[in-house]
Image (cartoon, rainbow, N blue to C red; front, side, top):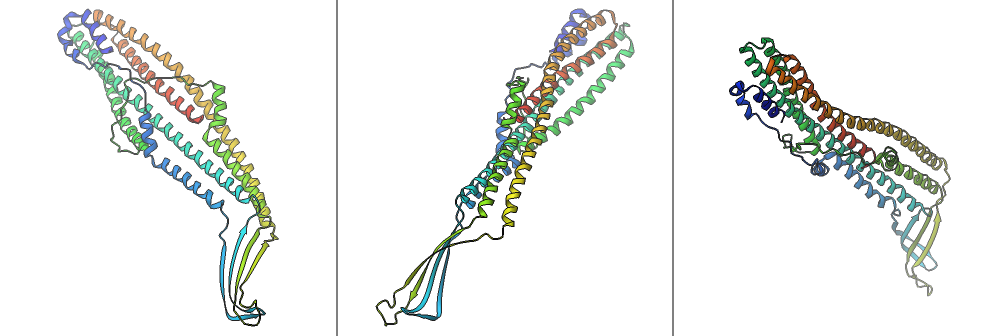
Length: 424
């Protein structure tokens, strides 16, 4: 758009240069169509394909399978014995013995073991959610960086075309005796710098596309759709509301809550394992017939009840102490992580506010620079003066346009990080 405005102004003030500038009428005109900044499709693709996220999900599913393992009674014992030399009794010889026994832990032990393992599984679920949030943050950040690189390429190409126009105008002025040969050289120097910058941007684009596609676990050369303009939205929460949400909803902190609960149940389980275990069982004894009395040959059934006596207390007390210490350690870890996350929040909240200010600043600076370029270009067209100032202002305008796009990308990246910190 700036190219067309510049050409129109030059033609209006310099009709004699129409033939020279006619070729520039075919220069690419960038039409900025407003596009919805919607990367939900890429986020969905990343969630479905990313191997790191699949690992965390499978780890969570595996931890769920451990719940039933610890919530079940120990296997019952069945034994069969055959008397090679039958034991003679009053009712007859004992020929075989069938035994059944079941050990029962102390009351409530299984429920506490189930709660312990369930909370460990919940912690793994929060780790999965944390991995997903981290993945989404990485995808968004890479996507906004790609947007900035593409806009930088477009802006740089447009400025190269504008400088080529200035160079042609300088040549016309030199031929007419109204300009200096230095003007052309200055334009050449600036053009060389921009062309080198464009090559660097192209290399950065290729590297960033590989990074983005690796996050989605697709081919490195997969096509990435970037909008013509970036829809900017403000962060939805106030500062204090966001801090409060971080403390309650952050997946890393919620994972620590479940770990602490798991250790609390582990401490209870350790105490109950130090209580007696109850044994219930029965023995069935086969008795042969000796023909001496009427009870001869009748099999016998023996019901038995027993308990285990936890005499060696050190191992139980050690398990109790371990669970108690790990609770405190996990609480300290949570506090430390909270401090780290709140520090990160402060940093990205500051980045967010700074990006908002920069968007307004560089938009305003770009408008002023455009006006300055038009004025200077008009003076040069009529008087052949201030060509160096035109190039200097054009360089400033390029900087302001690039910084505007960078501020837009930085703002959305900061919002993405704040969303990640509050558990979205």
